[in-house]
Image (cartoon, rainbow, N blue to C red; front, side, top):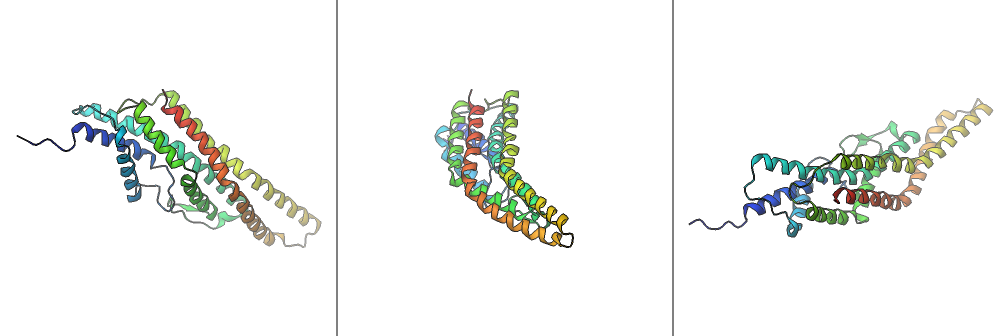
Length: 256
């Protein structure tokens, strides 16, 4: 007589489906110092969070058909990616604002490799990405994500979530916060830098002998750096406001 297995087939399937749901969000969540691609740190975090959600693992059928299991996998991936996109939009909004500021201040002429995206980015974009990753943990947004996953497992058991047209439109609407928050972050700085350009242009008209072209770059870069320090003080409040809006959208996504 064969001994009883330590874990039943239903428990193993529930673990796999929960892992797929949790892993979908880690593709988009900003983690400081790690790549946005699949990495050991993200895998370990996904496994740890999945195990911590053991009390709410779904009780699936022990022997589902291959087609039904694939449908469950797609359903779990859809809700995980949806939550991950909503959280990732907040960090991308800061990246957009930093990109606009770096372009206007002249930092786009020098770029470095962003450790998060592995792409050439200006130093201000790299700073904003690292700041967004730190604020993700400093503002407690990671705890809200865990609560959302636990609540989603209660509302939508294994394979019951269906990505409707209304849910897709809601995710797209949350994506619009990238532009609204990014412009709110960068527009005051752009206005000041435009005033600097106008002032230098007027000085050039008054005295054409002034070599203002060599003066414009250092003035705008130093002014942009000073304004970035001022904006850094406001970043936690702006991040919290943007994350609260994203959480409202995510809760609406997982609520029947």
